[in-house]
Image (cartoon, rainbow, N blue to C red):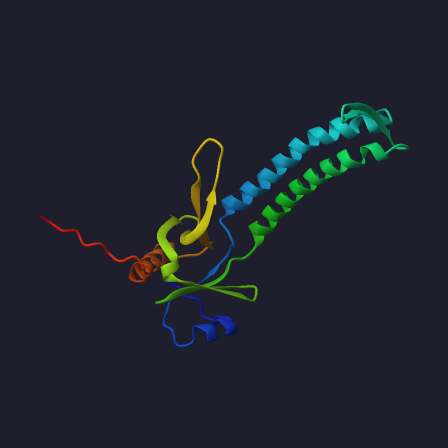
Length: 210
């Protein structure tokens, strides 16, 4: 397994005398599938919002005025009388900005680097853009998703949040640490799984045999 030869000085000072199990540089902050999904969702959001943009503003450009209903009262808006259109225009504009924001965030995350990851006997360190994160191995549940072809590992934490939905019971969604775009995925996965098991805070239950 090829480790990173030169680590940032700040990261090295934090590691100190701890023995390094592995050190890698993640080419991406998140798996490409998530970034692409966010980009397409932003495009879909903009396409859906464009229906309202065309329906509301189209007549304003073609006929010079637009007819709509406000609080049950028929209203006419025009370039000379834009005030009645102000609130609907702001609402539609907000939805357009949300779509643009989602698409830009997807593009940003697609090109964003994941930074340095270092595994020791007691913790997993991440250093990215001057920010250092430290995760004790006991914080991880041991559930992982590995994509050897794309070089991705997703390590689930014990922390997370409850997500509610209308047609199904509430479910727990764990926080995830992504190590994306690396080599030697299977070797690093073995090390992570070993360290998580060694530091598992849940005591093993003894099974009595009759």
